[in-house]
Image 1 (cartoon, rainbow, N blue to C red):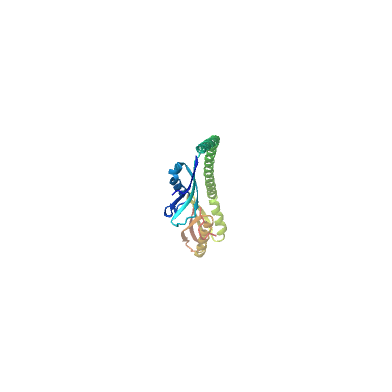
Image 2: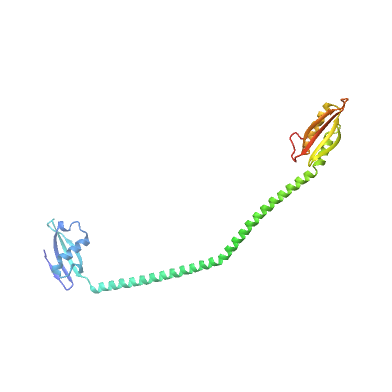
Amino acid sequence: MSERKEKKTSVYRQRVSMAALQVDGLSKSEIASALAYEVEPFSGIAGSQAEVSFETVLSDDPSVRIFDVTVTRKSKSSKNFDAKKLIKIASILSALLVVVIGADFFLLSRKIKTLSSSIEVRRPIDAKLRSLESKISNNNAEASRLEASCKAVESARASIAAKRKAYSALMEEVASGCAGQMVVKAFNSNGPFSVELEGSSMSVESCTASMLSLTRAACHAQWKASPGRMNADHTGSVISFSCAFLYDGQPLEGGR
């Protein structure tokens, strides 16, 4: 298979023929590896230690591929240099990584310390804020209670004032609303806020009109009127009647 050989200490050159089926479809690096082992018995250079370069030579037989192969022994010093260089680079990268990790740890520690200090400073402030919020809430509740109490007191005062003038208001309404329709004989009281009026009129019609006027007057003064007895004298010209009033503090429908 060898047509021409040239051998040196670390370089070997040979022309190699290989079957097309054996090499077609292989990549350039795969062909170089196959050629290294193909010439290994003649070059004395192990395939693993060989650096192969080749050129394809034109062949008259299409089933055969011819390669002009040059094999060089890999330099140990170069390998050692590359290994040392890689180790040195790895050491430098490791040192840089350690420095970066240390710097990151330092910065993170400072940040944690700063945050812890900030939390400690804010802790009493937060406690004061919570205390103030609690006091504000209590004050608002107390203000609402006092407001409700004030409204209740005002309502009670208004009710007391209305009851104080209840009798005078009834008398004023009766006097202004029923003047000229009847003669008032007496006002009698059977209990608190209860009044019975005794009066007279000249006819049944005027007596009825007086009762209606009394009902309206009582409603306007917030009293409730209840018509009572009605009697005529022996001549039939004077009609006596009574009307009871009960104070309820609420105006009735139909008031004047």
